[in-house]
Image 1: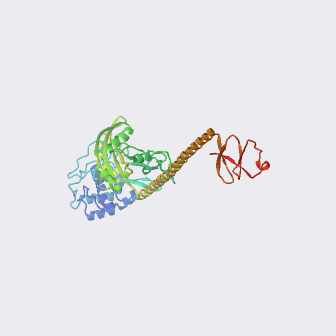
Image 2: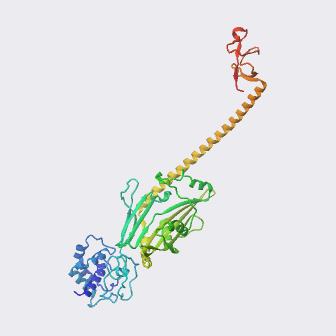
Image 3: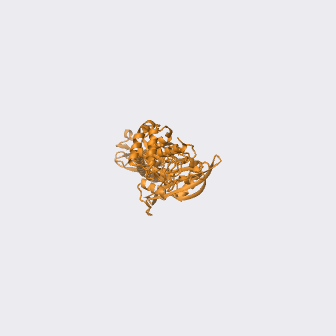
Length: 501
């Protein structure tokens, strides 16, 4: 078999198997007019054993079996190849379609270190690919030589919880990435740099091409708060009120004034990027803005009357890595929720959608569509959304109860302090009055006595320490503690009690 025939059959296998495996030819296929229904049926019968033998474990759909058979086309049986070749020749015995790429065009390898954006099918025969590395390898998962589709796989980040540390329970985040790329990701509780309840779940992930040069990175959200009401601002900065979820750390929810997305990037992101990077451009990113609005149930545009505001950007940066020039896109959106509190407003700010794509210089623009495909595919699963939202809401309720209890305690404390000061003030006045009266008695050489039988008080001389009174309004004064007039004098005498005035 000639090299040209092998190449033609290799191309035909990739395209005709779209019909055989997936049941329908892709609309953008270059061979759409070449295959008749009878030829499809014959090819299906001839190739069924090959599919079972070579790709039995590969799930159908998404071009996966096509890619599998294409990678192993040298093992495809002669009967399958001949049936496909017959189908591609068409009823007239020719190539069947002027849109078929030249038979001599080299077949690209199925794996690609440098993904390029999917392109629409050409309207004329495609020229032989140039000799650049990206063109030699083609787009990841692209059909043979055409670059007409992007073969993706679902990547998942599994949930771990505080109750089951290190145990993957169920998918938390799902996304699509090129089928040949490596992926790793994690959800960490209390792993962020913020103490805000809303960011207690930190999601990080990395997807990279087989050669590790082109990378997608997903970074955790970040949140902070601010208020222009003095009392609320005091509460936000009070460490006794604003501790991290569950008391796991002593981190506080950051307090800072609201910023634009570009200000946040330049002040809080750019300075931490390593290696150092240069901002080439900053542009609005409407697609991310609408994505964030849709996923957060926000209106399609800001109302201008407070509420929620979304500011999304994409930043283009340049840098050097291993002495090679690199480029990077960094996307982010700031969601600012505004609430009326006291005499002002509370601002609850979240930096979300923080995704970076790095590629060698000159290759970034070629990944424009891939960037958008991956960005739009990132989705939290319903189970993870329900779990995390319930968990966060629970801690906000705990915080609200804590704030109310602290306010009640503070109110009781304020009342107690008030009563204490009132008592101290009254006592001080009483002591002052007593002291003044005692001094005044000393000046007059008198002291106060009380008749225990009646409770009546009276002033007598202070020159004696003991005094008695009888019913005839007579008094006895003495310094002798053993003297008792009832034993030596007539009458009924009552000893008086010295008391404070």
